[in-house]
Each structure stands twice: as C-alpha cells, then as structure tokens.
Length: 258
Length: 293
Image 1: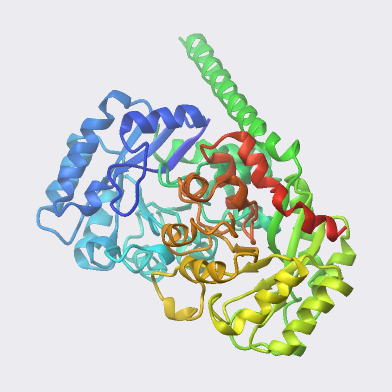
Image 2: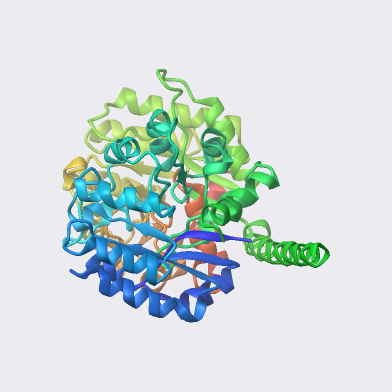
C-alpha cells in the first residue's frame, strides 16, 4: 500500500502539466499503484483569495473521498484566514493544512502564522510545508525566487511545540539534520519526505537511519514530477520491510488517522 | 463480533499485500528495461578524496556498486574543477585520477578528459595525452568559457580531427545566474554547432537545473548537438519534451550523481520502450565506447 503525502490538482502557470484534475490524478494513481494521496489545489497558491481554490478542491475530490485526502492552503496574511481555516477543517472535512510563505509573502514566525499553526495543533491536524514546488534554478521570471526557509521552520518548532509538521520536496536530509536539536522535547512530531534525497552512496538509507523510519513519508509531487524516481529508491534500498511499510503508508495512516 | 472484525482485518491486510505485490511487480517490470539492455551512463564523475589529491577510492567503489545494482554496464566519468581557472598541472592531475579509476574498474569506468580551453597549447596536448595514452573517449568542458567563445574553437577543431565527442556542462539558470557567469546554454551550443557542423557536442544534464525549455528550443534544430538526460530535475514531461524536440537519437542516458532521477525520469516517461532502449545505449556513440575497450 502507498499513501502519497504531496500531490496537486489545479493549474501550474509556468509550464504545461497534465493529469491535474482529481479524476486524472486518481487515474494516474491507479496506473502507478498509489492507493491514497494528500492533495491540495495549486489554484489556491495563485488566487488572491485562497479559499476559492479550497472550495474547488472540496468539490473536485468529493467523488474520490476514499482515495484523495484534501489539504487546505491558507494564507494567514490575508483577511478572513481564521474563517477559511475553520470552514476547511470543520465543514469541508479537510485533513491537513498546507502553507506557502514565499508565495503568499509572509514569514512562518509572523504572529498570525504562529496562531494558525497552533490552531492546527488544537485540532490535531498536521501542517504540510513543501520546500518548493519547482526547482529554484529554473523558476519563471514571475515565480518566487526563494524556497522554504529552514531557519523559520526551526523557530516555529519552538513557537508551536504541539504542531505536527511534514516537510517535503526539498533537501530534507540536510534540513532534518539542521532541525535535529529543535525537534526533540516537543509534543508535536516532524516528518520528512525523501523526494530529493538520492540513492547513490546509500544516501536514502542513511537518511532514514538518521531520522528514523517512523518519521519518513512517501511524497511524489504528482503530477508535476515523475513517480518512478521515488520507487527506485525503495526498490533498491536495504531497509527492512517493516521500515519500508512505515514509509510507504503506515506513518501517514497513523498521523492522519485513516 | 470479534471474530468478524478479525476476518475484516485479515481481508484488509491481504488486499494491501496484493496491491503491494502488483506495484512491485510493475516496477520490477519497468526495471527490466535496464536489466535486459546495455546501459551506458554518459555523464558521471569520480572525485578526489576530501582534503587530498588522491582518487576517492571508497566513493569510486560505491559508485560502481550502485551502478551494478541498477544494471548499468558503463560509467563514463570525468573529474572537473568547477569555477576558478584551473591550470595545466591541476588538469593533468584530474585526468590522471580518472585514469586510476579506469584502471580500478577497467570493464565499467571509461574516461572523459577535463579540459580548460583557456590554456590553448596545453589543452591541445592534454587532449592528445588523454585520448592516445590514457584511452579516454572524449573531453569534458565545464563553465570556464561559453561553448561559443572563440577561445574554444581550437578545442572543437581538435575534437573534430580526432573524431571525439565533447561533453559540456550546461544550463540556463534563471535564479542566481551570477553564480556561473560563463555557463553555456542552448543558445551557445547552437552557435558553436552551426559554426562547426562536424563537431559532436553533448549538452550536459538537461535536468541539471535551469530553464530546460529554453535550451531545447534553442538547439533543437542543430543535428550535431546531443543532450544527456541527467540532473536532479525530474519534472514530469522533461523527457517527453526532449524526445519531441530532439529525438531519441540525440539523447543519452546519464545520471551525474543522482541515480534515482536519471533512472526514474526515463522509466516514467511516456515514450516507446524501443526509444528508451536507444537512449540507454545510443548507437551513434557506440564507436566512441568501442575505442575505450
């Protein structure tokens, strides 16, 4: 079984991307053998009003509620964010929160962001922090010019000690190492994907050993990236089956109470 | 009631195992493409042991071990010095170190000679030494000069004379381009290729970071420019677009330090398997490989 923590629907404005509706995403998941996926709507990143994208997401995933797990993108620097958050979680039944500080131009340590992160902890839902959507070196001239700041994550780990975080699509092996001390003595947990951790020199296996198999999850960035890139690491890893299963689905199943 | 729950759990676990088995089988089937065909990795590196000027033997061993695990037959390696202006002595040391790796794994590791066009006479002599004495297959150029810079012309002419390919570090950086001010992109390759249509120029790592559409559009009409598919960028569509714009005959399999993306993007691409096989072992480059044996 596979649960993918990082997938999207919606329009990516900087290059042509297919399979970006809920229906197409599920078809792709069927072809690739992915059972369930956490999904957010890219439109929420680019609409001024993120909530319009969240409403679209809720509507699109309705026929696939046993496959797609909606995550709400909230902009805590925009009026009405508390109402958006409550609507997404309490009324639309979304299972997680997803934040894009560099796109929405705020810092994770801003007071409203911290308040939002603590609200997520109060409702016991995880916060997904993608480091990036596309590689920094190829960004379109209208795209952001920075990735998620590991330093700001370090600060919010202390400011929001009960919040569970999932960090994906970045140099998670070095970020995990940087956050190691800040991650202990917290009630909340920090999970990492291995999307950009390679297999050469056993880097992937060493990453899992360093972070712990209990803290690693599977994330592909479908449909923006190839999925096979992730499978090949698991296929040739020397990790035991128990650890692989945790990474493939068990950790997310437990975290999201599926 | 407990009995019914137990049956339900058993059924659920069986279903999961069945699904898992199906997926692993599918991926194993995809890997048969590597297992059942000759795989030439045209862009890899060996390095110095940190803090020394000696071959990092452990790194070299791990490279070969992982490559063997994923069914690669050949690793075409170089040891470039990025940035700065490496002199002839530094460059000879790099190439001697690659030669040591070739001796360590003669069946698998082939060499590409690192060259700095800034030292013309020494560069030409070094090409002769590496090709004729050390048995290397071609040359590797980095980001010291644009591919279209006139200073590179004698190097290109030498490669034409010897009938060897040039692998050129490349990319169109849109963020922090100042980090590599003389990094060649498709526009530079097109200019050099049109000036020297007999040259065989390989654009390094189309997924090596940067605007890959830019480079593909710029060089798609130059039949003597090829690209390797390596690089950590594995955007869905990068292989399909390269295939559409350049064709499988002008694509070379490679990994450049990131095996999972090199393998994954080829396996994941929606192009015919027969063309994937071509990319894994591009027949137009077979003669270069044969010379190294």
